[in-house]
Length: 262
Image 1 (cartoon, rainbow, N blue to C red):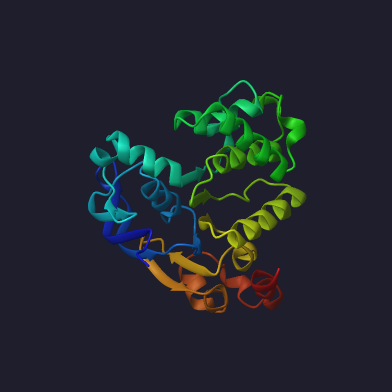
Image 2: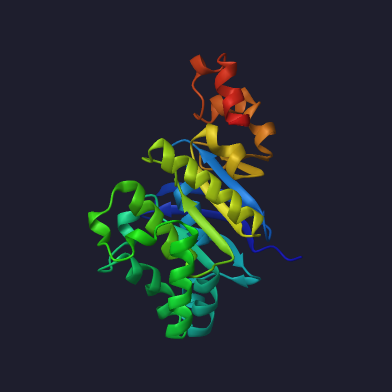
């Protein structure tokens, strides 16, 4: 089966000079659940933005669904509709993507923009509200919700598109424990449904529960490792050199066990 994404020698620089990613080579296949692990500033968010076609490489190429992903390609109606219906992005700050008067409107916005019939849109909204247990929020204004509720609505607004690929940027940040566990359980259900899930995080403790494959980005903006959660988490030197695990934590075996088993 052809990969969903194929990155070849991809580099990106902010303001044409500040390095964010360097020489990235990567294949992501249908149904994979990938965690992108790295310290702040390593390029995790940049990688997701590239995969979503929000920014484009300074050099190298990205193929998505066997098509080269470029700004010009996304300006064509056919490919834009094709791509946007298959790839959904959940931002770290949910307020970035919430702007409609009510939660129901938020969930309907994406499908309506893709030209789906109103009846199908209404069914999708109802299904996602029920799936995420947020039906009671449907008539609420998003800016009046708690941070956890906003995160749930942001995820719901993406799931209403029923995308094949979910890109999630630091989705567990700033969540209370109950919402955090709710989200981790949701990722499990989406994995069982065959979704391709790519999640950026710096939290070791969630990696094994949300992914079967882990990429480690270094502070030099390169990929230092690509393996299973168990392989990555037991590599203390890698984690220390990538500024993911501090030296004084290397001896805390309980912390590492938690990262693998929690």
